[in-house]
Length: 299
Image 1 (cartoon, helix red, strand yellow):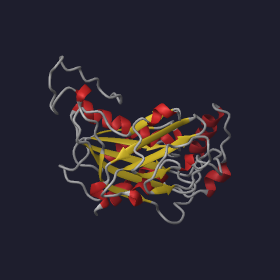
Image 2: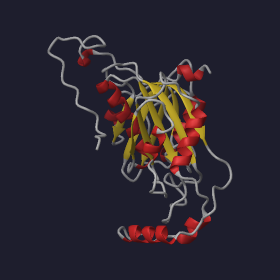
Image 3: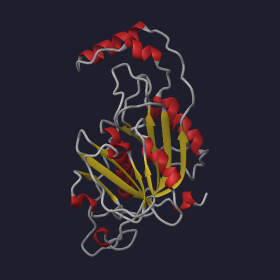
Image 4: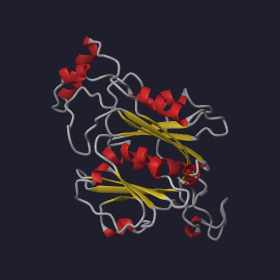
């Protein structure tokens, strides 16, 4: 067993300085720094369906627990690309990593689960990376799962003294149960994004990152001059962002988890940070994070 919650850092003695300087309470907030990225959007259909009675029985039994019928026709008509395959494609797009570049923690995020329960993305990814990074997945938060995954990764870095993080986001559109055809939750194609992020802040607080009800207090750390990537959840109303005068990219529906993070590459700017934001209408939760993309923006 391993724990996926960030370890608790013991408080520093009053007036004591930490490894990064003065105590955290007075430290300057720091932006995570995006240094490499890879996007994988495979063309054409995936592998054809090969009927398997035991798996179909499993889906029927699983769906019955939640009142969801196994949609065999939909499942058979979809091309198969597992989340593991997609994650591998994103790692290939990211490029080879040396032992010195290898992440110390990997967090996988997705909105729709993998149809293949025989493999776990977080475990399989470890086979493709040098070193022994801590690797686990975060789900059940819809379009906001990648935001939570990034927050968790940064917390591990802050509390464990790490500096290299990998965020893997996957959209996998083959499902054995009915899928939404429209709206922010609809998945219209397979995709995966790999983001290699450096944390240079020691135990300082991360800047420009928040999640909660879309109320004014949520935007206390909002940077209105940054480049902005607005996820598909913000296109249907229900939440308003603060005033913004920087470049803007709006993300179309169809890739609820990966859409905004793939668009982040196009928004990368050497002269200003980039804010990625999205809204989960069902939960009435909005999340945003700010990344320093200067290194990526000059490539």
